[in-house]
Image (tube, rainbow, N blue to C red):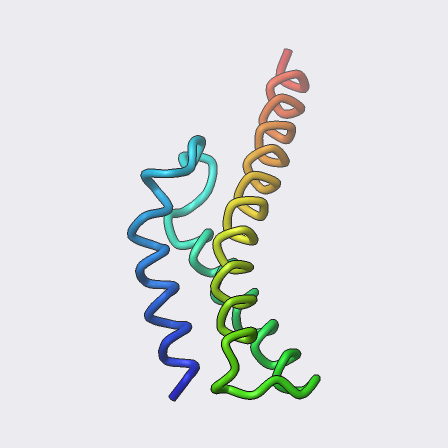
Length: 94
């Protein structure tokens, strides 16, 4: 049941992400939410395995703060990588 809250939070972040991030024409609109959902899921499992309780505020705070951070930096890294690849492809055609 708690995982459904993470999925819902990802949907909310997916609605906001295109308006916050620049350069989203380099990747699909679903890439940042996929990064956030993957990060949140893995972090949730790891924190549960470590011993955090589902009712603890710490597990919720860590996951809810890490997801948008991972979305931002993951999308930014992907955009930079794709720009470099585009520049290399353009230089190869000259």
